[in-house]
Length: 77
Length: 360
Ligand code: SF4
Image 1 (tube, helix red, strand yellow):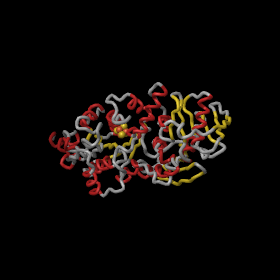
Image 2 (cartoon, chains in turn blue, brown):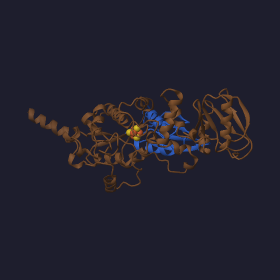
Image 3 (cartoon, chains in turn brown, yellow):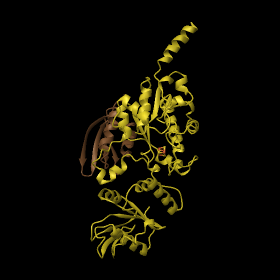
Image 4 (cartoon, helix red, strand yellow):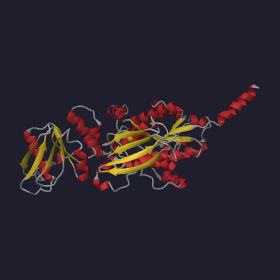
C-alpha cells in the first residue's frame, strides 16, 4: 500500500491522463498515486479515466494554481 | 475418441471470448462501430492516439473565455458511455515522421490522413498482438472522407498497416470483402452495415437506435492539421527555420495568440486575452519577450533573431495591441534571453502601418 507522487505540472490535457495511466500501470492494486497538475481539465479527465479503467479517486483538492488528485489503483478487473 | 476430442475442442473454441481493439477518436462513428461489435458479444477495448495536434482539451484549457465550458475529453466520455476501457497512447515523437514525410501526401491542408490512419492502425495492431486481442475495428465509412476513407484507399490502410484482414470496419463492412472475424464467424456479417458517402443520416439513425445523444460533432474537427489557418502557420514555421521539424512547444504555440511576421527572420506571438498571456508566460525564459508597462496589454513572444531596429518595431506592435494604442507613447519592457530587461518608449504602430501580409 505504498504512496507515490506524480508531477504533471505544466502539462496540458490529455498529457496528465497519459502520465497517470502509464504510472498506474507500474503500481500494485491498493497503492495510492498523488498527481499534481496545473491544467484544471485534469479534474474531469483523470476521474473519468479512473471510472473507465477500474481505479478509484480518493479525493481532489486545489492548492493555488495546482490541482491534486489522489488515485487508488484498482485490481485491473 | 479422436473425434470426441476434436468435438470437445471445437466446443471449447466456440467459447473463446474474442477481443477487439477499437480506434476511439471521441466522435460518433467510432462510438457506433464499438457498440455494433459489442452487441455481437465481442469484448472491446478502446485505444486513442495523442499526436500533439489533437484539438482536445488544450485550447480550452488556455483561453480564459473557454474555461467555463465543458472540458470533457470526448474519447474518455465515449469510452464511459460504452463501458469500455480506454488506453491513451502518446505518439508525439513517432508522429513527426508521419507528418514530415507522408508517403501518400497531404489532404486539403497539412493533414497526412492516409499515412496517419495507416500508422494508427499499425500501432493498434502492435498493441493487439501484445495484449492478446484478435482484431481491430474503426469507425471508418467508405466515401466519408476525401483521403483516407475512399473505396480505393481503405484496402491501402489494411495492407500497409499490416493488419490485413484483421481490420474490420463495422459501419461499412458490407461494402468491403469479408474480413477474418467475419469469415471465422466471430461476428455475423449480416449484422454489420453498408454505410457509404458523406451523408451522416444513417449514423444519426443508428445513434438514435442505440440511445446515444450528446455525442461530439462529426469527425474531422478534432485535429489541428485539417485547419487551414493552423496549417499555414506550420508551413510558415518551417520556411522561416529553413527546415521541416518541430518540437512540442512549437506546435503548442501555434495554437495560441496572434502570429505576426514583420520580417522573415522573426515573428511575434501576441496573447489575445488573459488566459493566453498566462500560457505564454510559461515561455518567457526561452523567448525574447515584450510587455507594455505604461498601459495594460499583451505579453508578446519574439521567435527568431532581432536587431535593435526589429526590437523597436516589435515594441511598437506590442503597443498597438495594448490599451494605449491611441496614445502618443507607450513604454514597453523588452527582456532578452539573458534575462536582462530594459524599457523602450515608442509610438504605437498605426493600423495602416501594420501590413496585412504580416498576419499569419
Ligand atoms: S484528421 Fe488528423 S488525426 Fe485524423 S486522420 Fe487526418 S491527420 Fe490523422
